[in-house]
Length: 64
Image (cartoon, rainbow, N blue to C red; front, side, top):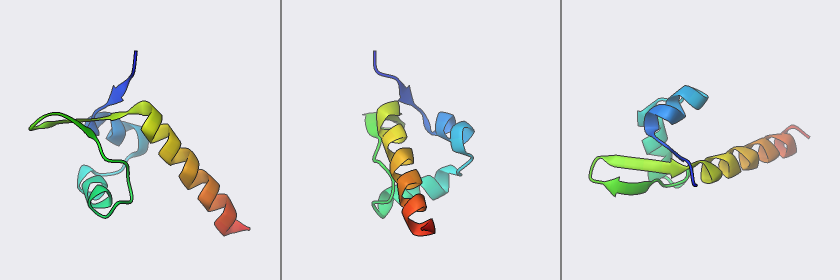
């Protein structure tokens, strides 16, 4: 079974404000959610973990 995270789950996970996250999505810097309704967006945990791994890898390249 696939696990989906809400905006609240993501806030608890990484401390990033929802307004910041939506701006990142708008500019293509963060994975887009899956919409389950007009006011219900969820992110597959696999997409978030992949995003995090990419950011970690990019930070290691930048530090070198």
